[in-house]
Image: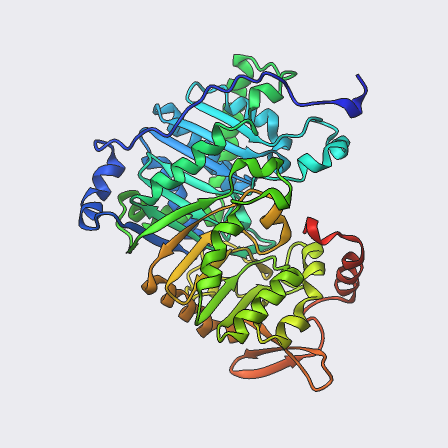
Length: 501
């Protein structure tokens, strides 16, 4: 068969499985029982702004789980934090915890041998979403471009069907402030209560769909033996030990941060909430066929906002339709504030190239537009503890919308065409004026120093305005960038189709 004709395996055996109901005898259940009883029908949320909290909360969940772990991610890096969490997965499985891991194949397929070894454990299943047909020469899947450009961008962590973590973070050093090169300002929600059932339903929906392939079906050429498995575990033990010696990990282990998440003894905001997500059918639908995608579920909240819409997205490509929509909102009296990446802080120049041409229109229409500086990500909300990285470069990765300071959406969806029409996305909508008000207030207090506010001068040229040490500074070209970064962004805007951004 010619290499260009490779196809995915047919008649794949997918044994359906579903979330294990919460068990009142588990440690997690006992720890949170009284809290849930006092807030009948509401869910409890702890916002994970801090990268270290985001890591240790996952670590605590894995260590405390007794019945099940359901893990769904777009990226799971093979770095120090990723290695330690893989080790914790195996330790949980050794205790008899059932583990289901659902990963997107774009980034994780390169680790298929390692994942196949992981799946040899009798209590671990691994599935890959929308996999490539060509396992080694992936570029040959260009003949299936209409299929493989659809990626599963969902992110959720569920332990014992009692606690969950949902938001923008993948698994990797840069998401947990452990990288020495680049770290991301991001946001997850640690949550308990009825919302966990909604997140479990999202996981089950994707796990049992035909876009999720068991790793065994994709790696028929890999026939690991028991000796291979034991060698894998022995090598992982060495990798984990080496990772645990890192200053970042040592300081986390020496702190008491994990104990609070293990017991559920963390500050909580209680509120009604609902889980929203793209249906898996989106992978086979054209944009005009997507009547129930995530955008359509969010649209009513945008339309009904009267006072303010606060938008945080690392990738922001509104398109002409989005610009016109925001213009009408502003004309109707709604204040619109957007925080996104600057050219200096962004990690995807192609997406920035699609965004840059809309800036003047947005500002002229009355949008308050901010771009994050390539540092100070740890101070987004005045939380200054840091144990890990010495990185001087940082970017924005959180995806959050706040409507009228009453309702807050935290999830995986960027505000760009790729998230809206190509990738699958998810999120949780929380009806909490207290959380929404606190969130916006903290950001607005800090924005003048951590970001540039864009404006137009008397000649209609863009300006970047910020405060440093209490003094206002104004720039007339993309701050903290090189000429090559600026040229590259301009060139990409000519060649990269906007609907792929």
